[in-house]
Amino acid sequence: MEIALFQPDIAGNVGTTLRTAACFDVPAHIIEPCGFPFSDAALKRAGMDYATRANVRRHADWAAFQAWGAATDRRLVLLTTAGATPLPGFSFKAGDILLLGAESSGVPPHVHDAADARVAIPMRAGFRSLNVAVAAGIALAEALRQTKGFPS
Image (cartoon, rainbow, N blue to C red; front, side, top):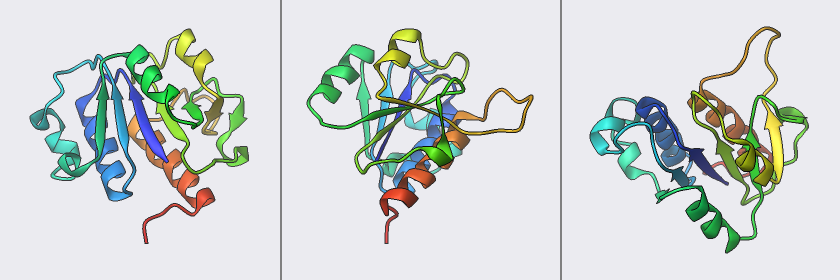
């Protein structure tokens, strides 16, 4: 399992997601540009010392991420409020890449269209979305549960 963040806007959410990735030994990808200067200082508050221990690969842009992904045989699973499949009904496979969009705008249509699967976390009516770091943690936990991928 891997996590990818598309053009994240908020350093604290990236730090929190990298902390989660480090704790569960899951590689993380940052698809730039970021909405903040990517640095240890920017990530420190939420990521604490865990963010620096995460396995992070930065991609200059969507095309660079796609080029990297073309060399792998993995599904790109987009977490989206416009998802067709509710999270509890989706079957994850080991090696899936969980893609989350920017906090302010999600992902553009061409990224949405490139996903192999689109998954939504069910929520109470009248609410638009979860915090991206929270959504990453929820989806990652379900994916690791299904694939028996939690660290021992």
